[in-house]
Image (cartoon, rainbow, N blue to C red; front, side):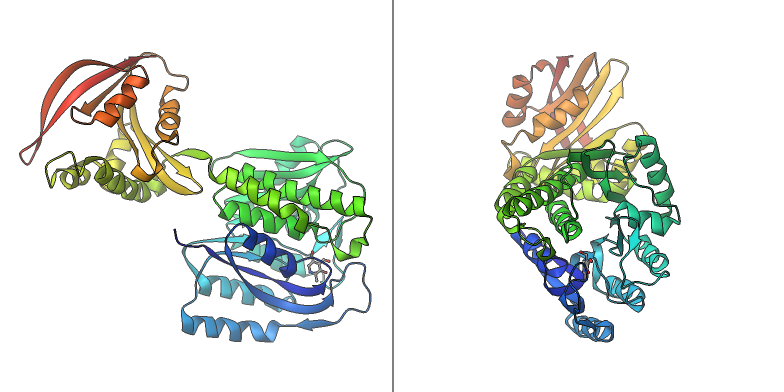
Length: 442
Ligand code: PXL
């Protein structure tokens, strides 16, 4: 499989774990290639150390971008954090466009404030600039202070009511992003964590842990880097937030227990092994989502691969391609969906691996398509897809299956389907489907 490459755009604070010195190791730990674009070089970060040096790299960014242009370098994801100057906001926006391909995911952590205060290095116009950058993102990861500044609402201290957070979610629709994760949220004294929303599906959730009193430098970057790493590994939004919270909280705990000077950041290094395990376990999980109009092209491509896997050794030459053209072209799928057919795709680690298509009917449902790529057989994908059809449904599930398709027939028998009759149906161009009709009573 192609190795994913992402670009992390943050400062380098030479000492005091934050920004690039956190993003590079955490993203690399899950096997993703992580390039870095430094926005500034500081001898230490700005929180708690005094007398730090600060070299603003604004003047270098466009030269770097121009050189990458000559090499046609593109990234699968871009993750931006602390920017070195106000001017960099527009420049970074431009760089994002230059290094993106069609499928690039843009994550923006609008690093600029915490606990109700703007970081001292930023002027009062910074939040408006950051808001523009957030509007360019697919996913944003602000804390509540940053979000409040960008929305022009008063920052209030927690604990919050869930209704208040819902109103913030509503107001944040103005960014036009697909997903948002907000850190530093508390619904009850002694608990703190992150909340998230997927604006494309309406899904919301929260991951809360016991609060560890104190201020821990660089934890926003540990969280952001872990979230990006997990999310780009294909974990669901909720699972990626959970993995990021676990790494962050574990890092704080270790640091408190060791009693080290907190200006040096938190000990995330000792948590990487568990983090990698959590991401690997999450990758093995099967996720299923309903296909909408925007997903029809990808579904059609998946059907192509799956039908050749299933039928090339079973049907006369030319028949799989003929059937794909007739029944699984994007146009055919769209018109089936307009007639009420539901398609759902299963992914593992973000990769589409199988799908189901069924039509609700007066007797229950007609199961029209159920395919899993050969290399993902045996993982329970077909069962998980069938569960989507079964959920909350009663009556009869009917399907037709090619009489020579022994693996599929065996699967359906194992799920309780019975052969009720056989039928031979001409499908044009001299091809005939010699099928069993099978049924399952729910
Ligand atoms: O962790 C955020 C951050 C990143 N980079 C620098 C910082 C800070 C927060 O203070 O000072 C230089």
